[in-house]
Length: 451
Image (cartoon, rainbow, N blue to C red; front, side, top):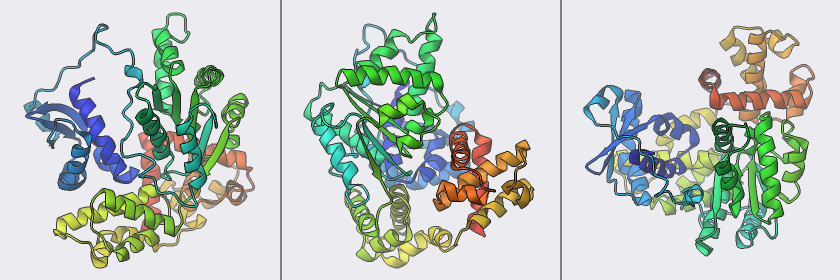
């Protein structure tokens, strides 16, 4: 892996932790590391708008991330694709067998800011936090596996990293392996491609079975990947029998993972299952105060309460709103943020939250976008274009309104919750792999929010 890629991966992890997922993917997620010159990391942007926005963050979010990363890079320079020819890109380097550390597989860089000390505990997550601490203090002893579930942006990943950081701080020899489900699946596929007899190669088996703690994030994305489920099943059994700690996260309870084999669902539930819910206003205030303290951002209580009452969804949205206020104050050269400045910085959020969205709004916008009739989308027609529109509408209703699956099924002609769950999961998965579906979802969401 190129040096520039490694360093950007480290720096960008801190940037991602400081803002909402949407903001990060829209701006920083589009940057590609090219090379390093004079201790400055050169990044290529596909769009002028992305370059301008990232440049605007350089004195705040980016500077803070560089300092936290502890690398020798002192700054970043964002260029456009047609400027890349003026720089000499790095050559791909491959470590030799002699120099490769046998424990490289377990050197995943846990985010050092994701600790128990930095995790704000409230009624929404106190059980999950207590269980995670117990696991960190006695891995493989008390709760194995630990299964954490909850909505997007509520702190599941933070807790998993906190477990890893705690264990490593107590014993540097422990082999901690944290991966996303996507990474697990990709590595499994690679192992089959490298194997001559279509069996798991030795390196894959050793990586996942020689660790002391295995943590897999977003396990719901294992749905319908039967061979990968088989690999995880045997990996799980091996680790469990050897009293190695397993921690899993998902956006739903194990019993709702209907597209994952029953034997895996059963194993997911054989330890302790805990959930994280949306934070109360008091918890949101505490989270914002903690984030402002970490970022050394001077902000009044009025502003903290204003943001906490404005953003009532998840922690990532809260962090995104606070980051936007920080960025706006930096532009305005204000040392302390007042309520008027916060309102100006978050006027887009205010416009969206003041708009009351209903199922009818979402369905109407979807019908308009795809030029189909309401009767068709809620009816029984199975034409490909109608089914696609119906599934996107179902996904948006669940995502934007949080309405129970059975209620959504009633709206769509009495469909059962399994059918609704399938539609939601399919679009969730496609949004990560199909740019066209992702664009359609984003376009319709924008239409709904502008009405």
